[in-house]
Length: 332
Image (tube, rainbow, N blue to C red; front, side, top):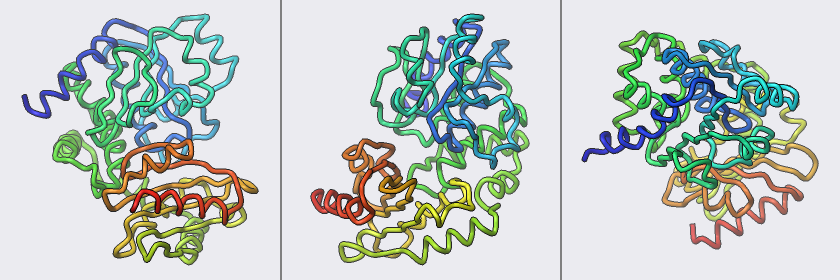
């Protein structure tokens, strides 16, 4: 059996779940990124094409404006208790949780989801919680959006220009415009199919990677100027204070996480952002065999082996010391 045949077989329970239900709630992880947004919207369009109805509800009260150009973006709703209660009173939906390893990563939605059936998870992160025996989790693929493509293909759904744009966007985002180590031949194949369906790569890539505000680029400059080397150059650290970021959206500076491993010889990059006094968000990147997902888990976070994140309380110096010590202890 080929890898592709294996992926298709794994998708069968998820497709059967969709076929067995008519009304759905779609959700994804907090601080939703390109893969979370695109996979939810792609699933929405897939269900629509299959004659199903669905709603998308995220924990986030504000959705990344870079993705406003995507079809059906206006369908994304923000969570509220009232909205949730009414939804489950009126028409009890089946739940599809996308791009999340655990209930806690769904925020307020996750707190309420544990009591709801039927449900399923479709995700490519290392599993932390099982949602149901039907869960489809595959850490070998690049993105959750690529998994939705496989379901659409198995369902015999036509990939129109709108669905193609959503699928291409999710894969392009989570592969770092096809440059990260998670990029596989299947991603290149799917991307080619989406281009044939009408996608214009330059339009999508420019919107999500290369359109910044002046303040955003200036803040990136501040971050680069702050870069420090540790452990004989094996670790690079970029730091931004809360005042540094007061005039920019979080998504405008997320590229600094990638820049943290761009210095020749670097094995691990840390992008540390001050959220509030003595509370920091850390993005972790790896250009080696060092598993930053394991590092993030030590601090209550998680992600992938080459890209992960966590949040830590304490002074800046203490937080950095804890991270460097944890890296040393693993012989990075």
